[in-house]
Image (cartoon, rainbow, N blue to C red):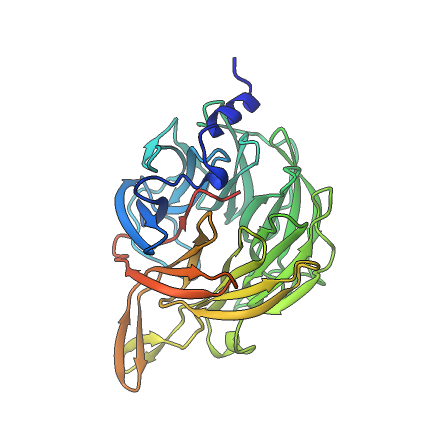
Length: 419
């Protein structure tokens, strides 16, 4: 009988380094529109995406994460809508799902095992580095659920938790630390509203043993007010975590300790906006995902703004900032230094990804928008924007593919090189 280690080795035996899975037709790239998960092939030299097919899920795609072998893809799906930000068409199915797909040699997806019902709309999923557990984060109510992964990679039963765990407020992203000893949970909190005070934010560091979760550390600044972590990413070869602070429009850097906890205080802090008062000037402004370049020399973060104002009965952009912010990383200290803000060519960059070779960044904008410039009206579509990544880390625009989001929001895109 195969044990889990043998299975993981077997799964990964034919995968290229970084799960690049390059084929004669290019590198598989995936992007969702509503319940449809599209497969493209990326030609790196020409920066061209070629549609290759799609699978349709029972509900809108929310997020996806590959098995460490690169041979299985786990997808969270729900027709639930976010409380703020982009909302799109949703089907009538009221269930929430976690599904597994086998990934063919050419990137095609085939359903694998039993789909699992989830208790609420899932925001984020990930897998531990041994391929043993699937973690799902939910914002309402804020929580994390754990499913075992069977020896064949199919999603097994949920792990019943023996103790109560504090997940903070508005859990948004769950990640396993590089040592596979702890989890980080970005719990964003909420800004104040006219009828409700602000909710504090935290990064919760959780232990997990045999699928059992436990509180180890809660990281915040002060009482957590004005602290809104959305996503984080780990440096590939240094003990550092780069955190995208949604409610502050900022980047924070934390040290990663040998025991899988984080430094108490941020080592570095940077404002992501060109206008430090941009959030006040342009309601709806925030930052989005964050990814460290595969070689560890640069870090990329999305500014996203899809707020609107009324203009003669027409809703138009309020001028919020939409771009990809590029920072160079000091090789000795890990300190980020701003080197570029690359125009998004779209609105509300909810997701972006970097190809395994580190040569191409693809960003998915979710929200069609009307822009008025000198009384000239322009309709800007949602889309996929491709950038070449230079040796200096800077982005150069290659092309944009307009995407029709009538079938639903473009919530996720990715390659198979997630850790």
